[in-house]
Amino acid sequence: MAMQQITILGSTGSIGVSSLDVIARHPDQFRVFALTGHSRIEVLAEQCQRFVPAFAVVPNAEAAGQLSALVPTQTRVLCGVEGLIEVASHSDTDTVVAAIVGAAGLLPTIAAAEAGKKILLANKEALVMAGALFLDAVARGGATLLPLDSEHNAIFQCLPPGFTGVSGAGLSGTGVSKLILSASGGPFRTTPIEQLMTVSPDQACAHPNWSMGRKISVDSATMMNKGLELIEACWLFNVAAADVDIVIHPQSIVHSLVEYVDGSVLAQLGNPDMRTPIAHALAWPERIASGVARLNLTELAALEFEPPDTERFPALTLARQAGESMGDAPTALNAANEVAVAAFLAEQIRFPRIAAVVAEVMADWQGSEPACLEAVQDSDSRARRLAQVSVAGYQDEV
Ligand code: NAD
Ligand code: MG
Image (cartoon, rainbow, N blue to C red; front, top):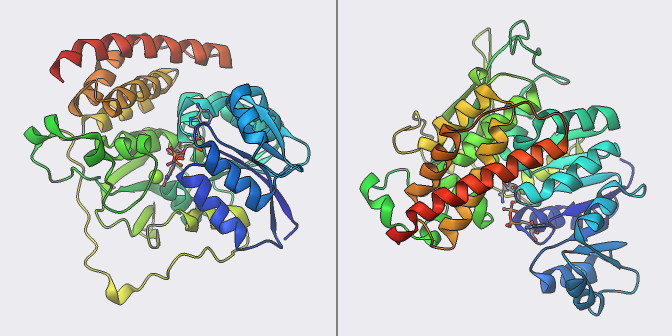
């Protein structure tokens, strides 16, 4: 394997830190080219001291001044979206780990696609909000898109090499009959529904199996995460929403499955640790050690599977409808969800109101097919404004 020069967008987050852990195990194969962070500047400074990247990126000039005093002289500090775009598309980087959370990751990830990089995608929101334009950029730039999301990475591993669905015809004629995303069900899978009005942000972020950033943790608790992943799967594998099933699997050992027309079902299993999909995508098509403990089959408790409860998790239905309409419906869904989750984390609305806010935005949404990134950003802004109005209507409950 040739030495890969790696940019990590969002290196201070949960995926960023796990990526650096894998990279550090293989100094002969990977070098850190650029690191970026948004708020935890001290963490970014420590990462720069350890990995001595050519670039580090922070949100603004003030943070750049702060960071510059703390990093090795070899590290140049850039700022803003322009800085993120520069390190994502720089001619000296081969591989970009897209691990910024939310819509903020869109422009740098698109820049990496246009520049033909190998993109390891964790930032599912970018693909959900601008799927068609994102994949256009990948095709135009000759980029390679590999999924880091554990479910999609599992499906990628279980599909035949080079698999793609048939545009308009989904899986027909491919030999594959279903993609099955597994979901843990999050911390509130068995909580009495009436108690959900009083759960706190910390309870929502206490995921039973995975340790993750706060936004995706809340998404897991509402199961909007699985809804976003359904749309993510449609784009990554060129299939229709109807080709993707969701099954609850509370142990998070079976990371997802692929069903074939002959009745075979292939699954990828492993301990719930993101370093496995990260190592898989970094080394693909080869394999490298990840530091993840081996799965001990004889010590596993029973593996359970059950259908998702759509009354408990209305976000699943909202996301499926957006995935069936496509156009800018997923853009609106994602934007409304980001606003609602931020309001819940700031204790401005109650937990069940996250899905209520998204439902209100989607109920009135007049869909269109965004022809360019500006159109995507217009749809995103419009949905955010509608979501803010909806949030305001629920604020007197807290
Ligand atoms: P996190 O909150 O731990 O980290 C987010 C990173 O993005 C941080 O480095 C932060 O500095 C940066 N960031 C935040 N806002 C930014 C902005 N406005 N501009 C630039 N950078 C910004 O989140 P995470 O759990 O690491 O998740 C990152 C992405 O990966 C999300 O899209 C999430 O859905 C996806 N993902 C995460 C996991 C997981 O296990 N954590 C699994 C699958 C997918
Ligand atoms: Mg996932």
